[in-house]
Length: 260
Length: 247
Ligand code: HEM
Ligand code: SF4
Ligand code: SF4
Ligand code: FES
Image (spheres, chains in turn cyan, orange):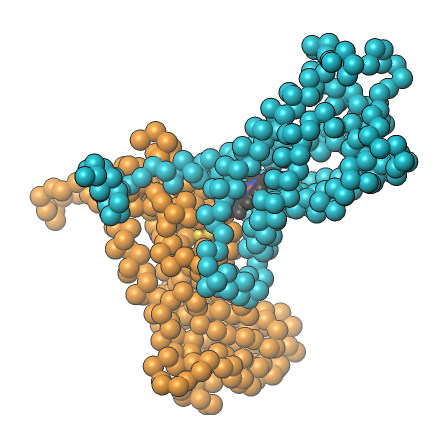
């Protein structure tokens, strides 16, 4: 025989005496994971774009995250742990945000028609967010798994080779567009959803937030494309040196060798 | 504004469909008429019904943006026909009934039925502590600023524009809409209502309530009474999250 709570929950009467607290927790968790990811993506873009300052700058950032400058030895495993945390955030966030997708053809059809008829900016932006979020299920999963399993393969030459010769270019470009639109709209939505920065005149604040959102999106897209091109160029230059690893000339001894 | 504009020929493209008539299919019918100075859509539609087509169905009562019965999709967005001046629009105007609500015919919908269902579900009335009825008792005083704040939210005319504009409400039948959330915010402010946040959580603490709202803010942008829906929904969301994570 089944236990009493299971029987009550099984027939859908669990929330009768008192409404479940889970919708509140899920709404909060969806926003917190979204916020964490959105802010992480900004930081991430700055780190990745260090290549624009030169190979040495990018190498230094990479080694910094591998703990080289603190521990004296590079441990790419640290990167794996960070990636695993981000991966977990993405999974939780996607699981929660998924609830908002149209759940069947009828809802899908209704929303499409509604969006077209209304031509209302924030409604359209939500649709863009849902679509790019859906794309990220696949794009982010592939990228994160690769980084988690091969954290040592990050560096000016290795990253360049991945883009030019390794077939990762198309994935990165689509992912860049998806993340920048998704994250930018998401952070804007967070502000209006929870009433942050409302000030005395919420309508004016919302307009300013919207402008800020577009400016940031444009900025990060531009930075992203420039960064992509920089890596592709390096990848092109070293197209004949498979598996090349860049180490600045001033580094003695080679940190990877010491790690072994 | 420009007087020479007022002799335009308007072409009103109205959606015609009578669900009660067997075999009727939705179609668009175009009516042409001369624009008059100060003409509202209410005046235009009345003229059409009077001079061109007595069968065209639409609702009006107050003609002054108070009763909330003339909501319709005007060029794709919900609005009050009696408060929409034709000179603000292009000469081609498309009209359709508000979605979500039960269609009576053409531009007329039964928003009252939906609103009543929502009110019963959310118990949108003052829940005072029970006391012996005494008609002579003087009402307890209310701080004027608070009374003003309650009144501000009480301006809702239940026109349904927010519901029709809401992507969430369109997709999910049981979503209470901005009108419902605004009402909860209104009674939550009212000191005569003795309900606590725990009680309000029972009413809107789920995905049909405040957590269902995806912050598309169309409601805020179309509300003909300019209610601060964005602020109220965000406020209620914060309160309900506190309730839901501590209670
Ligand atoms: C990988 C799969 C992902 C999916 C399927 C997804 C999906 C979604 C959806 C549908 C929403 C709208 C939720 C709502 O309206 O309440 C949303 C919100 C959001 N997403 Fe994502 N997302 C993903 C990844 C990401 C990533 C990588 C970021 C970081 C840039 C991010 C940042 C955000 C933010 C900040 C919000 C706003 C949160 C809120 O409204 O509560 N998401 N996501
Ligand atoms: S909140 Fe505004 S749009 Fe919604 S029913 Fe009330 S008056 Fe109409
Ligand atoms: S903010 Fe958007 S989802 Fe929420 S009630 Fe308004 S229109 Fe609907
Ligand atoms: S007729 Fe009453 S609001 Fe338009």
